[in-house]
Image (cartoon, rainbow, N blue to C red; front, side, top):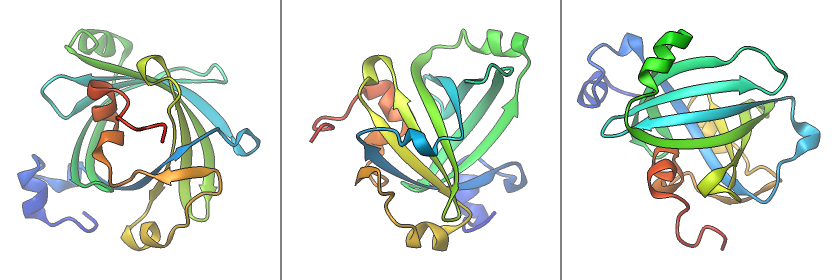
Length: 180
């Protein structure tokens, strides 16, 4: 597991690291979506299951393709590095798990594809998070993440602010001073 030792993985609940992958990610607030760069979009409905690190996700492609249904588990090693696992679900399994208690977060994710070696997305949030537009870039490793420039359409980096993680946004809503 790139950059995470086995003891850290075990302490976060992954005794066998071969079942997890490491995500390296940075996040920025944006005023708008650079639609001229969007190559695809999906509508996400995420259920953050109360008292767990679990997220149930339904992703519906904007082009009308079949929904992707999955259950994921995340644990933050740091604000920009986390361990993840994921399993894909049948509609019946998804329906059963969607009855679990939790907080729902809805957004449309716009993919910009590979930009300077990173996968870049811009999320437009809905409901209680209406008005929040956030970009994220996912990297192969820490070095690529560290040298990545702030996107020209971004306003402010929020990678180190845990209030801008999906789970916290779902449970706590928009952070105070978000519009500043």
